[in-house]
Length: 286
Image (tube, rainbow, N blue to C red; front, side):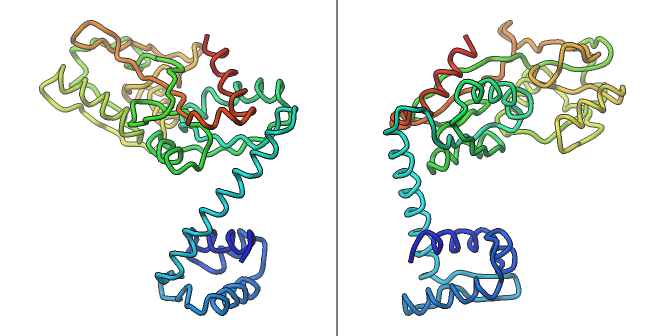
């Protein structure tokens, strides 16, 4: 059993389908099936079974999948350590980044970072901040950029604070908000909770939701076309866009803020390219 087999088991476990796993691994379905059969002979155990819903792993198969995951992680760490022994800052930086930050801020940051460190490769995963937090807990990424407050016991650096605003094409009286059409969008639970808590403190009635959309960009376009107002973090609105952005003020007279954090483990600073990126972010936000 080697690295190729570890990747086979991991991919098949994720896809739960022989054909899709073969496509991802750039091999044929018969070749993949044959290799699984050889592994079953090697371990004298059934690893998978095929059902109507696809591939299912046996108890023995589940154990080998977990073993493969750990071995791939150890191999990756060994490669990173060996590369780190060289004087040149190079290697593959594994990043987990909030989807919204990746959309509006990350491209410019990465362009300048890679200009300074051209020998660094980037492996980027995006998603909800809660998902990025889990990636870091599982050591799937070296560093996470998350929005909102999450339970993280490692190193944590505040990167930025931004205002949460009422966005509309015309000025809005906050007292009239419960009677106006609001456009909602799918977002991270922490932002939804932040907005909901503010609303419940200020108003005795629920908002008048006229639309539910999947993306914040779609929501913004609806607002730009006068179909309602939205509650948006300022990161997603450019200065030249014709929107009125009225910052939300809490009951204690402070602006409602959304925080962006850099989170990582102390031991990852031993990798020169991880430390270089964290230092670069620190300089960027100063």
